[in-house]
Image (tube, rainbow, N blue to C red; front, top):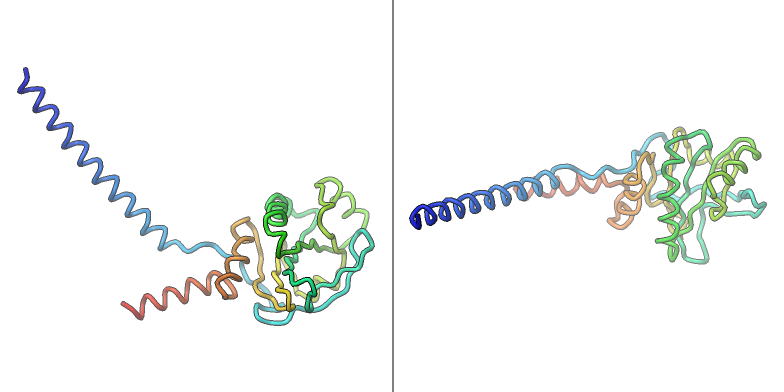
Amino acid sequence: MSGALAVSNILLWILVLVMGGVILALVRQIGVLYERVAPAGALVVGNGPKAGEAAPVFSVDDLSNRTRQVGGERPDGRSTLLFFLSPTCPVCKSLLPALRSIAREERKWLNVLLASDGLRKEHESFVAEYRLQQFPYLLSSELGLGYRVGRLPHAVLIDPEGIIRSTGLVNTREHLESLFEANERGVATLQDYMAAEQSVEEEVA
């Protein structure tokens, strides 16, 4: 009886060791897949102002009739996230919680501005329904034309000196946050960063 128990214990330990090896192999494979799958960045579309260029400067009244300057040097040393949206855009609405979170967490260095065009009454209802009063809401067709916004939602990150640091079509929170990642890494887009990393790896290899 004791011999059978010893054999069963040995088999159990062998099984445990095999399972441990399988788990370690799976963890390693997940790490490899994570390295191979590049993070999704904002999609750069159109012929509008690009990262590294000076942002077009506009003076626009918001829905509270306060004049806001978009672009140009900011005396307060804060960056600006200009987010183009529409009351009829479902994706834009889905990103509103992310914008609230970003505005709260990055308030020390970032101003978030919402921008659109169309009938004032429609946008006032939109602001009230989705509780967007915390954001300056700019209503200007010239603003969209100046930044060549063709598809929504579109976001532009402008630094305190008035230089565009990243821009693109943002369909998810990941896209939106990629603008900040690109800015921190000193590249126009995360795609550029991944391409540069791959080039370095190929040279090393």
